[in-house]
Length: 453
Image 1 (cartoon, rainbow, N blue to C red):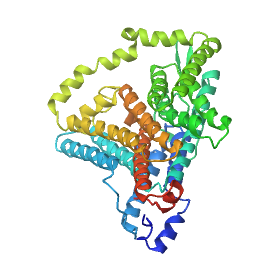
Image 2 (image 1 turned 90 degrees about the vertical axis):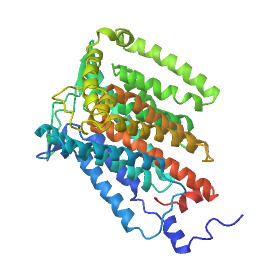
Image 3 (image 1 turned 30 degrees about the vertical axis):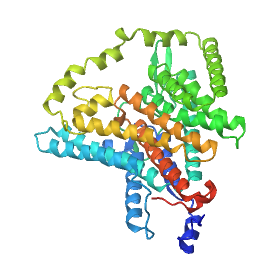
Image 4 (image 1 turned 180 degrees about the vertical axis):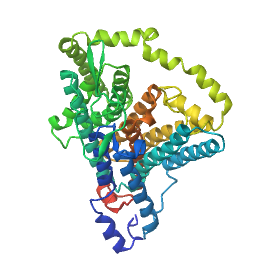
């Protein structure tokens, strides 16, 4: 068998084997810190909705991605077209087309501002996806980023548990120099006598959606990463599960169920039995330690007909149908259906209104592509942990895709940023897995020869 590195100049091999630690993983870690640590209602004064520190950092990361593509000296040839990047291109194209159409008709000042802000949000989300998809250098660094994501999710969940136990926010009183409060914010709400925590998210629903997307990664590390002690493996997953269990919302329990059920086909029979027993024990523990919680949750799922949050969503269907009939192909323009009209609490309905049929198909295609490539690429890594990360990433995107139907996710920085980061990580996993497979080298050697592409 020929040496896979025989056609690569030695100087390039040396440079690729000595990739700096300040790579995309470092950039994305900083993005996560800004996204999760700074309360979601804080922006840089004078910039309004465009002044979110995490969004501005994401835009800067996008410029870094562009600079890298223009400045690199060594040619980088993908073994095949990057599916996630292609799906993102289609979605961005649909958004730009709807924006052009919107600018050709009379708009109110709030609609123009909403459309411009929508483009800024889109470019920030796309930047994070592209940096993750193209610039994570190897599987080892990808695993490091996923570990950091799990730790961040566990800390977010821990703050939510403290809020649930005390009924205190601890967030709204924080003052950060240079940042101002952009809108009403409540880190703790009440439902049927139980505190609904949100940590630093804008709402309990966003908080539950973010934790639901992180849970499959945490469970996979807990079950598979034998290089760490059981305490280090299981503590983050258990904290996230506990936070979702006491979230007091349908979204939290739906996300918890999705995180577990979507991974069942990829687990052994023994692991499934252990998870079933642990789930039963967890429900019993919840019943004993938080009296009334299970009854409250049962009411949330059985009394949907009288639930105001459900009726407010369904009451908007007629308005959506009327607006959609006026512009069924490209919609009325991304960001132009502002909250002064109606809060739809469903990103897919909002996408139909603003981007039309093409935009909805592009969004669904992007989500499906991320799921498919992550599951497909799991066949190639030889080690068990890396193989299991594929279904875990797919489950994360699936949880985000399902919960996106329960609120306008792209209007929430933390939820939108986490979902697009997960999509980018699916693309990175596919790229790195297919390169390791084509190189014919063991994972460690193939990682040394890999580079962003």
